[in-house]
Amino acid sequence: MGTRKSATTRSERNTTAVIYARVSSKEQEREGFSIPAQQKLLQDYATLNGLNIASEFVDIETAKQAGRTGFGRMMSFLRQHPSCRIVLVEKTDRLYRNLRDYVTLDELDLEIHLVKEGVVLSQGSRSSEKFMHGIKVLMAKNYIDNLSEETRKGMLEKARQGIWPSFAPLGYRNIEGPNNKRVIEPDPDTAPIVARLFERYGTGQYSLKDVTCWAKDEGLVFRKSKVQVPKGTVHQMLRNRIYTGDFSWDGTNYRGSHTALVSHELWSRVQAVLDGRSARSGRRVKHDFVFSRMLSCGHCGCMLVGEIKKARYVYYHCTGNRGPCTKPYVREEDVADAFGKVLETIRVDSEVLSWLTRALQSSFSDVAEYHSATTARLRTNHDRLQSRLEAMYVDKLDGKITEGFYEAKVLEWRAEQDQIERQLAAHKAADRNYLDQGVQLLELAAKAPFLYERQAAPQKRRLLDFLCSNSRWTEDGLQVELRKPFDVIAVAAEAHTREKAAGVASNGLSANWLLGQDSNLRPSG
Image (cartoon, rainbow, N blue to C red; front, side):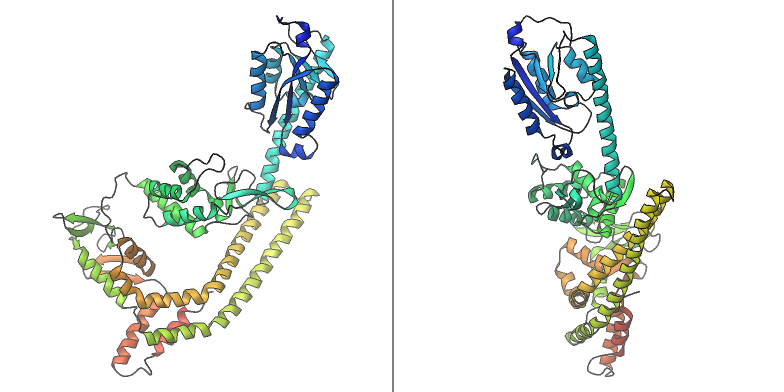
């Protein structure tokens, strides 16, 4: 190929060779271009022509960028062994991916045997042969470029179909799906860890460093290297919407067909925690105050934060973020007592708890009927949208509608399908958990004061966050709104206590309980 001379003898050069085999994608292996098939062809050729195989080099890649490890090792071998100047390869596009490869090989003054093409190229080849070979190199490069373009198109089409088109992220694994398409499914080893990672960070009680160390202890490592997952990767995972069942590809969000590891609500909560942490200063909180950032100032609306006075007493004061606030400090004991009195308002006795549980169970048949009818309606709407998508795709192929119109309607209708599927999932979960969650809520109302008195600070916060909202400290003390259904339970409990003390309630039950059940235990529309 070149004009540089070598000191080795002609006989040595004509008998020592290397074999190079390459496939540009795993799909080609299924099409008969497998590495073993190429190696067998080249080995038989060497035997037939009396050539000694010094080494064999293999690459299995798709990208046209540099990085072929087998090709690089072959070049190093040829430079270190000047007695070997014969390269056996199946055909032109197996050897070259770009013009740089052509120039690199030409500089080594090699004898290249393109076995399937029946061509041997060397410095003694005619100019017409070299010219034709150059044309084939350009065609090979064009093939690689086209393959890369088609690969990108294929990945985009998979994304539009809701299939994640690349390697599975941590928590998932790639498998062979329908129609020989690669899809992802939850990895039984890592998916539970990833789900708990989101839950843990979503509480707002742990830093990225904390959850990263926790993930390490749980055994979360990279799939191939088995190296511990660093904090930066954990941060990227927490930002990745693919764990909700949706994903982003090439700047566009798609509704995925894979199984979600976390709910959209949990993912949104995690984003809020991440955004909040990034907005705060890097100052570490030295003390775990129970009520910090749970209360707002009744005067200016800013948050109340804890502070230690005289090395032992905890007080809460306004942050003053909206300007100086003159409201005095509040002792932690006063705040704790005030919350305890709020929780006493939802305490019910065992007699009422038993009656409510029976009423909840008897109402289940009505709830099941409601969920069944709603689910059937949602599925009908979903199927109608799917029929529209399929019919519109045919219209696009037939040229009846434009590509732009098709893309716009696909996004619109798939968004509607996404909303329907979320509603279906919510109804399925509600139908399954109605009784269990209802009973648990009633039991929590009965036990809340007891739990509050005995729990540590983090558990106290979670309990209060679950039961209360819009907590603020005013001149009159603590003002709280109870979350549903605890607000209804509190009103009915107060009426029941008052009527029972007056001897009005029959068998300890007030008509307020019936009102509470009708207004709150039935599903909302």
